[in-house]
Image 1 (cartoon, rainbow, N blue to C red):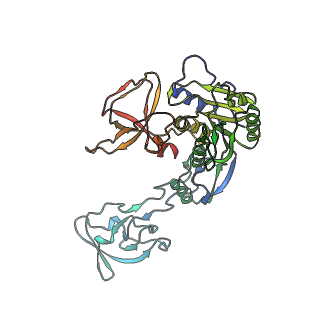
Image 2: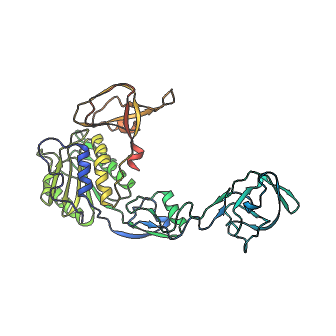
Length: 419
């Protein structure tokens, strides 16, 4: 069961700052997803349930970093060439049997376990051969071209922490220490629905006054990209009893419920009342643009997230607020989306005291410096094409009122937010 406090986000009076809402999120929402063991091939995108502790070192033994010849550094003449007979051969997976005494060189290949005794390796390109004798130039440093055991991973060390969402390189790291599986969180089960008599399914007729339901499909795509198992509840009509029953049924088989629209207090907005009647709902009165209303609540003990109905507001609030909620429910550790600094192509004015996100495309700078962010020319919350034609969001903090052209601003790339 989602551990959501009854007073989570209960708020009155002045508008809550965005960073305060995110702080409360981190405090009040705890993991709900179960735990299961998955093989290596099924780990990408999963969230670790336990720390991964390396049972062995990587590499497990000292090894040659190049193709060449392993020698005792003490045998080398520091001022001139050194001649040593070549006796023995070591390749990857085929170590030299027994130690190699002083006064000899061993032919080695990249990745081969270092023979017992020699401590340095000459690259083959630097060595001349005279029959079975190798001629080595002066100047090699002791330990050259030798990789130490545990250089990558030390045995007994934590290499990945619980709550980490696994990427391809993480799966490779787990395999490198010899583990064939890992304990991970089960995928979060999320039900998605829309409400509104004006909504129609894409592919059907849309009479005058009707619009196609775009938000539901965008939400499902975002959730699946996060690794959730999504159930499409469909479009619910503006009838409180139907909305109430659908929410109750969905709560029985899911970890979270997500919708957009229907969260206002109008006569035809029934979601708020339906959620409140079966658990509770607490509004964020956030000082943000675009956004509001955004809500977190409970339906029969399961998490409920209600997002704005305008497409742009829905996407922005999902990425910045709903996504952290759902990731925490799924067992992920806090991992704020990384922003980077770009330059605003044009001056910007905004209301002080409100955090804003502006859609923008990145434009390479002719001077080779940081790229410029070019705002989408229309900023209406219903203009979905503005998201399609943008690379991400300029984020302006509450304290910012004006941004001159060329000034540095924070930029949240859609690729980072959705990863």
